[in-house]
Length: 112
Image (cartoon, rainbow, N blue to C red):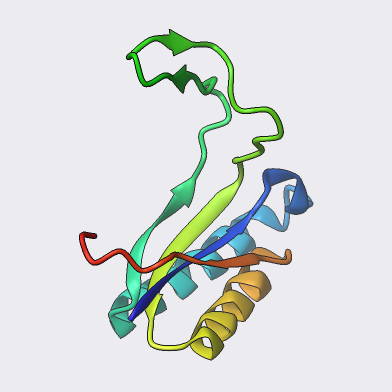
């Protein structure tokens, strides 16, 4: 089976304060469904209150990131048999989160 990254940048989720608790409940319900189906690997949101750093090959740490890097928002990793299944789960998450989701496929690595 293949692992898929389903994600959205934080600015894609435009909600009112009244909508937010419903989105939390709906998105948690989809995650529980994925867990029950045995396809859930990992998920969460990037803590944007904590600044990222760049750790170099020599072990040095710098308060910067790669130019153009934009990793923020929320993501879910699912392990699924087909891309069509991944699209369907992406749709469920998009409906729950009230925003479009990016779908990416991890390359196969026999060591992982």
